[in-house]
Image (cartoon, rainbow, N blue to C red; front, side, top):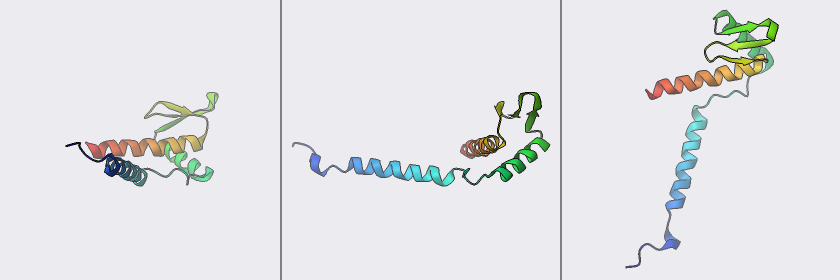
Length: 96
């Protein structure tokens, strides 16, 4: 017996389907950061400063995200980073 017909092999189709499904699952659970405008970012950063999660360093013109140690010179960058960082931690907690 010669084995399976290579023209009738659907394993590549199945693998492609699996990859597409995994990508859709990741997209469904990811945090949308595109909706952060400057005002929303500033409000989030102010809340994070009040909660001692972010420390402004005026002499260096940066905001330090205390939980990760990362520094940012833009409140929008910090807000996007914090949302992603929080989502990542939440996903890790769900896996445990």
